[in-house]
Structure formats: structure tokens, C-alpha cells
Amino acid sequence: MKKLVLAALAVAALSTAPIQTQAQVVVGPHVAYHTDDVGVGVGGFAVFPLTSVHQSLAILVDGTLFFPDGFDFMEFSGSGVFSFPMGEGASVSPFVMAGVTYGRVSVEIAGDDVSSSDTDLSVGGGLSFLNLGSIQPAVGLRAVLADETGLEFFAGLGFPLGG
Image 1 (tube, rainbow, N blue to C red):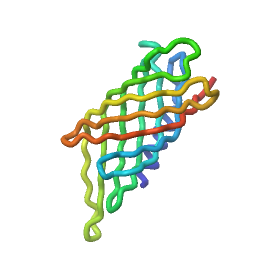
Image 2: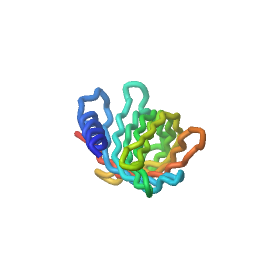
Image 3: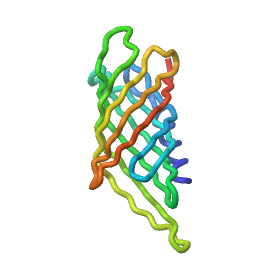
Image 4: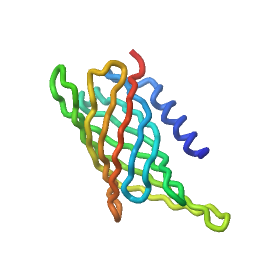
């Protein structure tokens, strides 16, 4: 739990660091459902626009703590995101993403904490909902490309930082 709190603080610190972009950094909470017997999780995310490279590119970082029965599972991801331009006044914006996901599972066996971790490629996509004032919701699906591909459904509420 201490590592999760430190990771959340690191994401918060990174999201408030000065970045030379024309768009706003977006941060917020999310919920997720993982199909690999991991179940429901909660976490946070930050989106850093890369408008100096291309107006549709961003970096997404997120961390999620899942609550499966009998063990602990947490996941951290960093992905490149491409949002498809839909024109002025559009209410949704589809996006695709690809990146790296780090997962860690731990279980207590006879009083000892046993853990394992893995880093894999991940791909996914979803929809961002636009023109809702100071809230930017998004929903999506991510596939972690491991030996057994697991699907993760997610929904988040983003809040733009700064002016």
C-alpha cells in the first residue's frame, strides 16, 4: 500500500510539472475491470499532450490497484496515445494507444509475502467525451500482450489543470 501511495504522489507531482505544450494536462481517477480473475480496480491517470510534436499525440500514465480474492495485484502503464480529429463541435473523440504495462502480484503464504512482476506491451483504444466543461470523461479497452492476453475495461473522469 505504501508503494501505491508513493506512485500516486509521483503521478500527481509529474502532472503539475511545467510542460511546454499548448494543450492542458489532464488528471483524474479511474475504475477498471480486468478479465484475468483480477476483477475491479481503482486508480489514477495523467495525460500529457505532445502538441509540439503533433496536435493529436499525448502520453498517458496510469496506475491501478485491483482487489482480487486471495492476492494483491497492481498495474502501472505508460502509453503513447493518438486521438483522431473529429472536427469542431464534436462530442466524442476516438483514440488508440500502445505502450508498456508493469504488473505486480503478491500473496501471503504461511506468513511470508511472495510476489512476482512482469512487464509487457499493451494496446487499446476508446472514446473521450468532449465539450462537457471542466470534466473530460473517457472509456476504453486495453489488451496486455502477455502469454495469456488479458483485457482491461476502464472509465475515467479527467480534470484539466491550469488555464
